Image: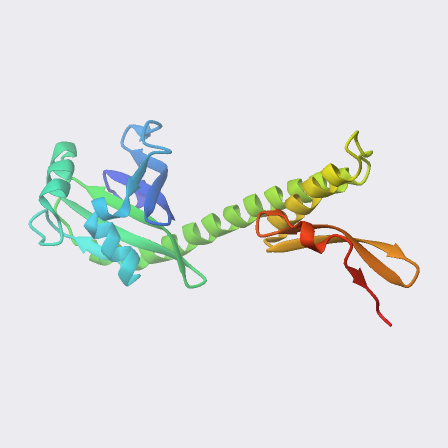
Length: 212
């Protein structure tokens, strides 16, 4: 992308709440590994912040642009940058990051904005897919941990410690406010343990459900 646009630098950030996290930064020397992983408050970069809130590409053709703060202007001047474009990375009505390009020349990127928007859509899709895979992997790991509970014997304290751990973990995995375990007794079900709002709820123990 940097070569195709003939720019000095190209950075991709993910948006995590009000924080930007650099996932890649490439200039004439290659990947800047020191920049990767660094985080910044999005408010520190008003141009990128405007791109996020407006969901529109923001172009700064020169550092005289009023959108550029004195702090930003000093940062860009230190690197010799004279212009930039900030593209919001939007996927399914969500801004997942920002694509920024910088150049040492004053330019409005007019001939390249459509290309940048298309590239932004591709990058946004990749970020969203990576997040989904990460979330799915974590969820599968948690579910596998729950399955392991089935083979655990009760310890010296009886079955209660095991039920406490199980119900707490189930609540966390599925995002539930409460989890109960019942034992079948003929046609009825008796509550053995209740985890409610982040703690054990002994008031539910012994409660009987009779479907008749």
